[in-house]
Image (cartoon, rainbow, N blue to C red; front, side):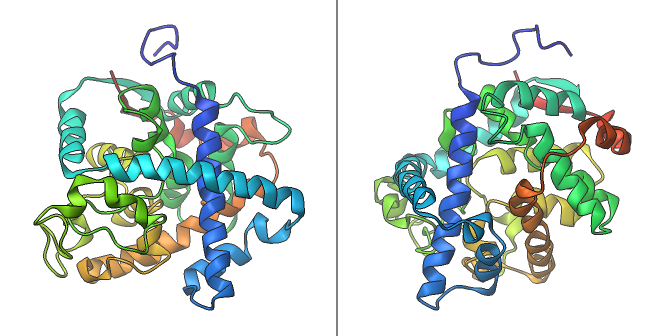
Length: 315
């Protein structure tokens, strides 16, 4: 695959997407901090905040930046929450199956994501390749299985969706949530769902909606974004275990894995998957402060995976 081919949109700025993604992480941490002060935080939320860089660097300048981030992120979520309807999500899944895709190796996909997104100051931000390798390496150092290392390596590749077939930032990043049932108040900025027509729908607006108790998360349609997109691709093209698929699909599903929402849809399998996701997420959030990795050395170490080809990008 050659990057000289007109495979992707050149009118979109990757820095803006990645900056927003970082701000979303920050706001999730701030939400956890606020709940800790009120003594209403879950165990997962406490661990998320206590191990965060935000907890280690609470200075005035940082908080001014975080206040700005909160306003920007709220505006983003207002758009996301209004546009993530059942109708849109059904169309996104139909498009995924019907459109031809480019084929590339995992390393080519990582390089492409790096090229498109990494326009930021190298003194203040890791490149995409560095973050993915850093996540995989942190998992390896802790003696986790190789399939989990691979999961860390590829978990953000779905962000390529932004440069192909996404409508905007709102259907690429942000916390995910079920559609087709009532929007839980534990979703961040849940008050902004009032502009979503599904919120007042006679079926979609009810607690269970189109689902039934204990139906299993496999049967629940989550809002479309980079993790749901990559989940469908990896499920179709790999032999990764169910735990890996769960880590990819649910790592942005904060209302579920951190706040305890939507447990009414869980079955026995989901209890195991929840444990897997909670074991994975610290590597995604906290490895960002470990320092830049040695790219060429780690590339060789993970080369077994990097030559595998996947049909990743929609044309």
